[in-house]
Length: 102
Length: 414
Image (tube, rainbow over all chains, first blue to last red):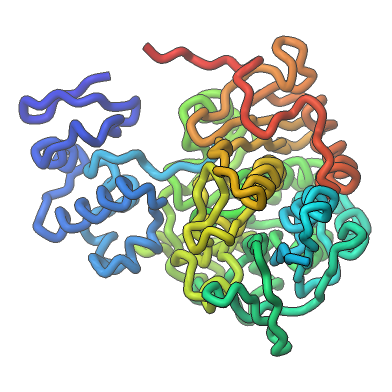
């Protein structure tokens, strides 16, 4: 399905995650962050850049990896994106949410 | 003679030795295999051991018994790989030269990675069931446990056999019903992911199981510490879950020799090409099974399919031919749901598990993503297949190394 953020139309799945990272812009990220109740700061964007870079390089993401990234500690990550930081930040980043096999 | 050195004589390493032995001798290669253990465990049985459904004798055999004639088994700990000199150093100070190295050292639990998990309460009120000791100690605990809050908990992904914690939850429900004490047990499943199911079709088809079996879900829980004294687990966001009996899947990590060798990711998994199974460490180093960082499930079926494809690629490497980028992430797993039923899933890197029949279209006899008694019989039969076919490197009829779309209800995308 399609969704529009600040005039930009993007494809999303049932849970509101972008299905194509190339459609992502900062405005789209901002729009999704608002829906998640997150007010974006420079530190937030730093995390988003890191996540997108990892995704493009096909590196699987988990909380440990973010905590060891040098960008944020796990505690800071929680403070930036409360209520499931990896799930929320992945959605803002335009990348798929972390999944298991079923 | 040139040497193919296999590190690890578990499911993957043993399969590789059996596949290669008859094929490489005539090419002038011998096989050496190193493992620190003397026992080969049937790991899928660790799910049944805590519930007294399997006995210890069902899950333990001698490693030696499955190493092919002509291959040399060395029972010793690995210190590290010296890739520049094509050498593996053992902890007894000896060095083994190799021409081709296959890393098959799997993954193990690392409870020391979580604050408070190891210590006074370990294997008393906090258990794992991913090790033989853990599963056996948990069996003894469950035999005498009077009930209370049972929490089944996943520390972080990736883990070996990602469906096992859910299966454990389902089997717990059956176990306590059969003991006539289900009303005394509160079952909660705690996961770092967004739910017990995370893929669309599985979520749609299987969510009823949790309601039917009265299993509570706590999602998005990233554990910071176990407070063993007050019997609670606490996540980085401050969320707390109380338990009387905690069954946890600790962080899973690759072998520490990988770190000592200077390659491996933050969890000691070996960087490996997901289609050829050649590592990115060096061209004569390959990896198979749970030890790799490929984005497939860490499961015996995956190792089995990988082993068939890696065997072909090792032979191509020996002959100086280009490797085939053939592995598609194929996995095939039974999921016990309790009361003599099971599900079956068959999927790969890109195809999520869907409904249908397996292995034959419309005939089955197995049903995909549906609870049936036949699937449960398949899971039980698998123990025989494992000991008699799988680790001996025999091909399992009608099941190909890459995933087949036949019999699957796949929604066609526009």
